[in-house]
Amino acid sequence: QDVRLWGGRFADGPAEALAKLSASVHFDWRLAPYDIAGSRAHARVLHKAGLLTDDELTRMIEGLGLLEADVAAGTFTGTVADEDVHTALERGLLERLGPELGGKLRAGRSRNDQVATLFRMYLRDHARIIGGLIADLQEALVGLAQDHADVAMPGRTHLQHAQPVLFAHHVLAHVQALSRDAERLRQWDERTAVSPYGSGALAGSSLGLDPEAVAADLGFERGSAGNSIDGTASRDFVAEFAFITAMIGVDLSRIAEEVIIWNTKEFSFVTLHDAFSTGSSIMPQKKNPDIAELARGKSGRLIGNLTGLLATLKALPLAYNRDLQEDKEPVFDSCDQLEVLLPAFTGMMATLTVHRERMEELAPAGFSLATDIAEWLVRRGVPFRVAHEVAGACVKECEARGIELDELTDEQFAAISPHLTPEVRSVLNVPGALASRSGRGGTAPSAVAVQLQEVKADLAVQ
Ligand code: ARG
Image (cartoon, rainbow, N blue to C red; front, side):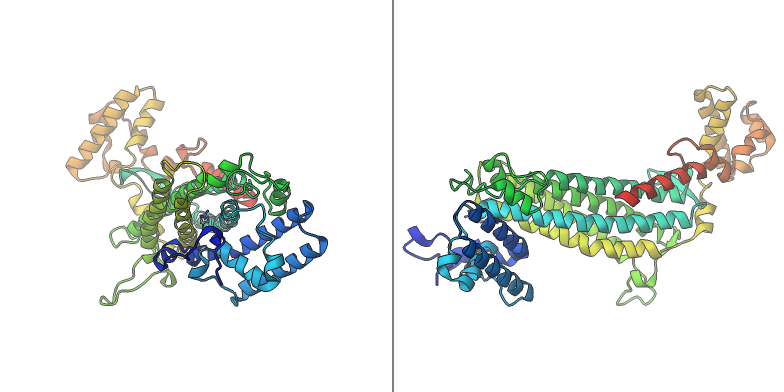
């Protein structure tokens, strides 16, 4: 039996090479439940338009239910000969209802409006799954911050010691980035809540169907597409989804890179839990941060999915072109990758051990309190330009003597500048430096506590 939906004007079936090239059923099969939901909604508007009798609608819905159960059980699947999921499911329906009734469902719809709709439904579901996984990671990071609320560490710029910060402050910076990613997903979801069903191949339908009813039936809060050409041909919702998932990958890769560095012998800031690290096949002593490395690696893949998709969309004329069949695999892959990566990543972050003594020992190293000397001078009326010079001279003196700032004697301070009275020592300690940065968003324990409360309140509604 010829399963093609378009055989009428052709004398011959497709060449095997074409069938192989054309097939998407091996990757679009995951749209099957959405296709069936779409068919149910479509059957209802056909009935509403008088194109299916009450009895036909009842039998159609029953047939779709049987098909759905067989798909779920794996007893009905698509084949290469079916070309795509839509064709396969139509075959399934014909097999269950016979050609007379089964053949009625196709009226007024095209695979073009179907696929554009189902793809939105699939990605919206996965945006929520990924959003939930991000919230789990945020919870783990908030826990990490909370459990080490008073631990100081060297804050860095250019990877060089800059100023001491609270470890919690640093961890919460990553939580903020993830909050924006989660927000992007929510806003994307809202924007994508428009149904192209009813757009037909590109021009709409002459059958008096009700696209708004289909949209409501399928959970599209913003109704049906205002332009059938755009409805079938636009894929910016896919590109935007690919961007958001790539951005999530990039944000994870930045945490990952730090974990990898912190976990080295040289840093010794953290130790990963055995359950979330791997060994070496040859070196018995090795314990590797593979989860973090895979996060770093997969971020490249997620970026590739975005750029590949954009290249596919570039300069495509309206409306549907078969190029658009290439839109699915990249973002299906982005979903798959994040959905395996995020739980492992969260486990790694939730279970790592923080070595507070090591972090705190290094917090003041590398003259990271030089800014505090300069700002102390400014509070005493010294212009910042001069203060910067003076603090710089202190660093120079220390470097020459191989000592730290707080090891300079009163005489050495005075010799550098008469402004440097012994009281300067009051700022040459990490707790003092931290506490002094108490403005909104700063690293003082009081400011970080506020931030923690805000982040937790945010997570509670997210
Ligand atoms: N499988 C196609 C896709 O993913 C949908 C089919 C549209 N085919 C067509 N010849 N109009 O885009």
